[in-house]
Image (tube, rainbow, N blue to C red; front, side):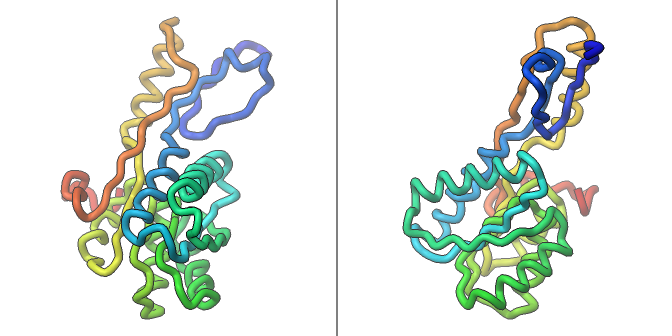
Length: 212
Protein backbone atom coordinates (compact mmCIF):
# COMPACT_ATOMS: atom_id res chain seq x y z
CA UNK A 1 0.00 0.00 0.00
CA UNK A 2 2.99 2.28 0.52
CA UNK A 3 4.34 1.47 -2.95
CA UNK A 4 7.22 -0.69 -1.73
CA UNK A 5 8.59 -2.81 -4.58
CA UNK A 6 9.26 -6.51 -3.97
CA UNK A 7 11.69 -8.39 -6.18
CA UNK A 8 11.14 -12.02 -5.30
CA UNK A 9 13.41 -14.99 -5.97
CA UNK A 10 12.10 -18.41 -6.98
CA UNK A 11 8.55 -18.45 -5.55
CA UNK A 12 5.66 -16.69 -7.22
CA UNK A 13 3.59 -14.79 -4.66
CA UNK A 14 -0.07 -14.25 -5.45
CA UNK A 15 -1.14 -10.71 -4.59
CA UNK A 16 -4.18 -8.56 -5.17
CA UNK A 17 -4.23 -7.16 -8.70
CA UNK A 18 -3.89 -3.59 -7.40
CA UNK A 19 -0.42 -4.47 -6.04
CA UNK A 20 0.77 -6.33 -9.13
CA UNK A 21 2.82 -3.42 -10.45
CA UNK A 22 5.01 -3.61 -7.33
CA UNK A 23 5.78 -7.33 -7.68
CA UNK A 24 8.67 -8.81 -9.65
CA UNK A 25 9.97 -12.38 -9.68
CA UNK A 26 12.85 -14.38 -11.15
CA UNK A 27 12.11 -18.11 -11.15
CA UNK A 28 13.19 -21.31 -12.80
CA UNK A 29 10.96 -23.07 -15.29
CA UNK A 30 9.38 -25.41 -12.78
CA UNK A 31 6.73 -26.61 -15.22
CA UNK A 32 9.50 -27.28 -17.73
CA UNK A 33 11.35 -29.34 -15.12
CA UNK A 34 8.32 -31.60 -14.86
CA UNK A 35 8.11 -31.87 -18.64
CA UNK A 36 11.79 -32.79 -18.83
CA UNK A 37 11.41 -35.42 -16.11
CA UNK A 38 8.49 -37.06 -17.90
CA UNK A 39 10.32 -37.14 -21.22
CA UNK A 40 13.40 -38.59 -19.55
CA UNK A 41 11.47 -41.40 -17.87
CA UNK A 42 9.63 -42.31 -21.10
CA UNK A 43 12.96 -42.32 -22.93
CA UNK A 44 14.45 -44.75 -20.39
CA UNK A 45 11.57 -47.18 -19.69
CA UNK A 46 9.18 -46.69 -22.60
CA UNK A 47 5.51 -45.77 -22.55
CA UNK A 48 4.32 -48.45 -20.11
CA UNK A 49 5.33 -49.31 -16.57
CA UNK A 50 4.88 -48.13 -13.00
CA UNK A 51 6.20 -44.72 -12.03
CA UNK A 52 6.35 -43.50 -8.44
CA UNK A 53 5.53 -39.77 -8.24
CA UNK A 54 7.13 -38.20 -5.16
CA UNK A 55 4.90 -35.16 -4.73
CA UNK A 56 5.79 -32.27 -2.40
CA UNK A 57 2.46 -30.52 -1.75
CA UNK A 58 3.98 -28.23 0.90
CA UNK A 59 6.31 -26.51 -1.59
CA UNK A 60 3.81 -24.04 -3.06
CA UNK A 61 3.90 -23.33 -6.75
CA UNK A 62 7.33 -24.97 -7.14
CA UNK A 63 6.09 -28.51 -6.52
CA UNK A 64 2.67 -27.87 -8.06
CA UNK A 65 4.21 -26.62 -11.32
CA UNK A 66 6.73 -29.45 -11.53
CA UNK A 67 4.03 -32.04 -10.95
CA UNK A 68 1.71 -30.40 -13.49
CA UNK A 69 4.43 -30.44 -16.15
CA UNK A 70 5.10 -34.10 -15.45
CA UNK A 71 1.45 -35.16 -15.41
CA UNK A 72 0.55 -33.26 -18.58
CA UNK A 73 3.49 -34.71 -20.47
CA UNK A 74 2.93 -38.29 -19.30
CA UNK A 75 -0.74 -38.01 -20.29
CA UNK A 76 0.40 -36.97 -23.76
CA UNK A 77 3.35 -39.34 -24.29
CA UNK A 78 2.46 -42.37 -22.19
CA UNK A 79 -1.24 -42.46 -21.25
CA UNK A 80 -0.98 -46.13 -20.27
CA UNK A 81 1.72 -45.47 -17.67
CA UNK A 82 0.65 -46.46 -14.15
CA UNK A 83 1.35 -43.61 -11.71
CA UNK A 84 1.59 -44.11 -7.95
CA UNK A 85 1.69 -40.82 -6.03
CA UNK A 86 3.06 -40.31 -2.53
CA UNK A 87 3.78 -37.18 -0.48
CA UNK A 88 7.30 -36.34 0.65
CA UNK A 89 9.57 -33.34 1.29
CA UNK A 90 12.60 -31.64 -0.24
CA UNK A 91 15.17 -33.38 1.96
CA UNK A 92 16.99 -36.70 1.90
CA UNK A 93 15.63 -37.94 5.24
CA UNK A 94 12.06 -37.75 3.91
CA UNK A 95 13.16 -39.22 0.60
CA UNK A 96 14.69 -42.21 2.40
CA UNK A 97 11.69 -42.86 4.64
CA UNK A 98 8.97 -42.29 2.05
CA UNK A 99 10.78 -44.25 -0.66
CA UNK A 100 11.29 -47.16 1.75
CA UNK A 101 7.56 -47.20 2.49
CA UNK A 102 6.74 -47.03 -1.23
CA UNK A 103 9.05 -49.94 -2.01
CA UNK A 104 7.34 -52.03 0.66
CA UNK A 105 3.90 -51.18 -0.74
CA UNK A 106 4.78 -51.64 -4.42
CA UNK A 107 6.51 -54.82 -5.64
CA UNK A 108 7.30 -53.20 -8.99
CA UNK A 109 8.50 -49.64 -9.57
CA UNK A 110 10.10 -48.99 -12.94
CA UNK A 111 10.98 -45.33 -12.46
CA UNK A 112 10.72 -42.53 -9.91
CA UNK A 113 9.68 -38.96 -10.59
CA UNK A 114 11.37 -37.00 -7.82
CA UNK A 115 11.35 -33.20 -7.90
CA UNK A 116 14.54 -32.52 -5.93
CA UNK A 117 18.09 -33.87 -5.76
CA UNK A 118 18.05 -34.15 -1.96
CA UNK A 119 14.85 -36.21 -2.05
CA UNK A 120 16.40 -38.39 -4.76
CA UNK A 121 19.55 -39.03 -2.72
CA UNK A 122 17.40 -40.42 0.08
CA UNK A 123 15.31 -42.42 -2.38
CA UNK A 124 18.41 -43.98 -3.93
CA UNK A 125 19.61 -45.00 -0.48
CA UNK A 126 16.28 -46.72 0.17
CA UNK A 127 16.45 -48.52 -3.18
CA UNK A 128 19.99 -49.75 -2.43
CA UNK A 129 19.15 -50.85 1.11
CA UNK A 130 16.11 -52.76 -0.14
CA UNK A 131 18.20 -54.51 -2.79
CA UNK A 132 15.71 -53.56 -5.47
CA UNK A 133 16.75 -53.86 -9.11
CA UNK A 134 13.44 -52.94 -10.77
CA UNK A 135 13.95 -49.16 -10.65
CA UNK A 136 15.62 -48.11 -13.91
CA UNK A 137 15.43 -44.31 -13.73
CA UNK A 138 15.02 -41.52 -11.19
CA UNK A 139 14.76 -37.80 -11.73
CA UNK A 140 15.73 -34.90 -9.51
CA UNK A 141 16.09 -31.16 -9.51
CA UNK A 142 18.35 -28.42 -8.25
CA UNK A 143 21.93 -29.19 -9.19
CA UNK A 144 23.49 -30.87 -6.11
CA UNK A 145 27.13 -31.84 -6.67
CA UNK A 146 26.82 -34.89 -4.42
CA UNK A 147 23.92 -36.07 -6.57
CA UNK A 148 25.90 -35.36 -9.75
CA UNK A 149 28.69 -37.61 -8.49
CA UNK A 150 26.21 -40.47 -8.06
CA UNK A 151 25.23 -40.45 -11.73
CA UNK A 152 28.20 -42.43 -13.05
CA UNK A 153 28.47 -44.57 -9.92
CA UNK A 154 25.00 -46.09 -10.47
CA UNK A 155 25.20 -47.87 -13.80
CA UNK A 156 21.96 -49.80 -13.25
CA UNK A 157 19.85 -46.68 -12.68
CA UNK A 158 19.65 -43.67 -14.95
CA UNK A 159 19.95 -40.70 -12.58
CA UNK A 160 18.75 -37.33 -13.88
CA UNK A 161 18.56 -33.80 -12.55
CA UNK A 162 16.51 -31.04 -14.12
CA UNK A 163 17.90 -27.69 -13.08
CA UNK A 164 18.23 -24.04 -13.87
CA UNK A 165 21.28 -21.86 -13.51
CA UNK A 166 22.47 -21.40 -9.91
CA UNK A 167 23.54 -17.91 -11.01
CA UNK A 168 19.88 -16.90 -10.99
CA UNK A 169 20.34 -15.49 -7.46
CA UNK A 170 22.89 -13.04 -8.84
CA UNK A 171 20.56 -12.27 -11.73
CA UNK A 172 17.75 -11.53 -9.27
CA UNK A 173 19.92 -9.02 -7.39
CA UNK A 174 21.06 -7.38 -10.63
CA UNK A 175 17.50 -7.05 -11.86
CA UNK A 176 16.30 -5.67 -8.53
CA UNK A 177 18.94 -2.96 -8.89
CA UNK A 178 17.66 -2.28 -12.41
CA UNK A 179 14.18 -1.80 -10.96
CA UNK A 180 15.57 0.70 -8.45
CA UNK A 181 17.39 2.50 -11.26
CA UNK A 182 14.11 2.94 -13.12
CA UNK A 183 15.00 0.62 -15.98
CA UNK A 184 12.39 -1.38 -17.89
CA UNK A 185 12.35 -4.82 -16.23
CA UNK A 186 9.99 -7.66 -17.11
CA UNK A 187 7.79 -8.52 -14.10
CA UNK A 188 8.32 -12.28 -14.44
CA UNK A 189 11.53 -13.81 -15.77
CA UNK A 190 11.77 -17.59 -16.17
CA UNK A 191 15.11 -19.40 -16.41
CA UNK A 192 14.94 -22.40 -18.81
CA UNK A 193 15.53 -26.00 -17.74
CA UNK A 194 18.74 -27.98 -18.27
CA UNK A 195 18.86 -31.79 -18.05
CA UNK A 196 21.93 -33.46 -16.54
CA UNK A 197 22.67 -37.19 -16.39
CA UNK A 198 25.66 -39.50 -16.77
CA UNK A 199 26.08 -38.53 -20.42
CA UNK A 200 26.85 -34.86 -19.77
CA UNK A 201 27.48 -34.59 -16.02
CA UNK A 202 31.21 -33.92 -16.50
CA UNK A 203 30.27 -30.48 -17.82
CA UNK A 204 28.57 -29.65 -14.51
CA UNK A 205 30.96 -31.15 -11.96
CA UNK A 206 32.93 -28.71 -9.81
CA UNK A 207 35.97 -30.45 -8.26
CA UNK A 208 36.28 -27.63 -5.74
CA UNK A 209 32.74 -28.17 -4.49
CA UNK A 210 31.64 -31.61 -3.27
CA UNK A 211 28.13 -30.59 -2.22
CA UNK A 212 26.58 -27.66 -4.14
